[in-house]
Amino acid sequence: MSTAYELSGRTAQKQRTRQALVEAARALVEQGTTPTVEDTADMASISRTTAYRYFPNQRALLAAAHPSTERRSLLPDDAPDDAGARLEIVVDEVVRLVLHDEAQQRTMLRLSLTPTPGELPLRQGRVIAWLAEALEPDRARIGDEGLDRLVRAIRTAIGIESLVWLVDVAGLDRDDAAEQMRWAARTLHRGALASC
Image (cartoon, rainbow, N blue to C red; front, side):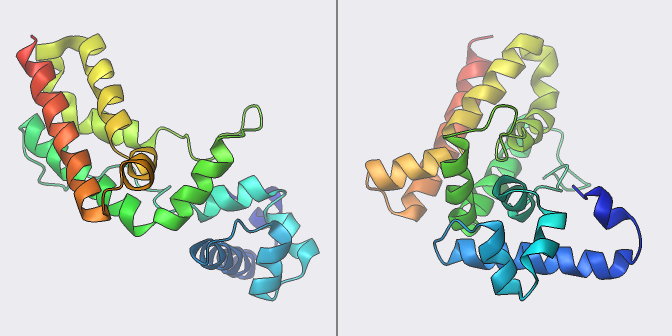
C-alpha cells in the first residue's frame, strides 16, 4: 500500500526508492534477520528519514516485503471445473510459495505472534480466498457453512504454520512436509464430500 508521500511529486523516482527498500528488506530477511526500517535504509543506501516516509514502522515494511501479497488468484485462466483438481493446483502453489519464501514467511509469522491491535501483516486472508475460489464448485453440494468450514480446515493444514510444525517439531524434511500438507488437503476435501 502506498503512502500519501508516494502519490505526489516525482512518483517514478519514489516508486524506485520504495522498491529498493522492499528489496533490501527481503534480502535482510533471507539472511535470517528481522530488519528494522533503519537496517533496511542502511542496506538500500537510503536515508533513514526518507525510508520512514515510505514505511512508518517495521510492520508496514515487512508487510510490503512479504511475497505474493498482490496475487488475487492461483488458478489458471483455463482452470478445471472439478473442485478436487482446482484444489490440487492451489495447494501445490501455496506449498511452493511457502517453501520458496520460507525465511520471509517465518519472519512474518514471528511478528504475527505478538500482534499490535488491528495490525496482522501476515493474516490478510489470501490463502483463504484462494482456497474458497478453488472449492467454489463444491458449494452446491456442501453448502455455504460446509464450504467455509472446509476452507478453514484445509488452511490449518497448509502454510507456514504447518511447515514450521512439520519440520521443526515433527522432524520431517521439507519434501516430506510438503507432501504431508498436500495429503492433508486432499484428505480433508474427500472427507467433507463423503460426509454429505
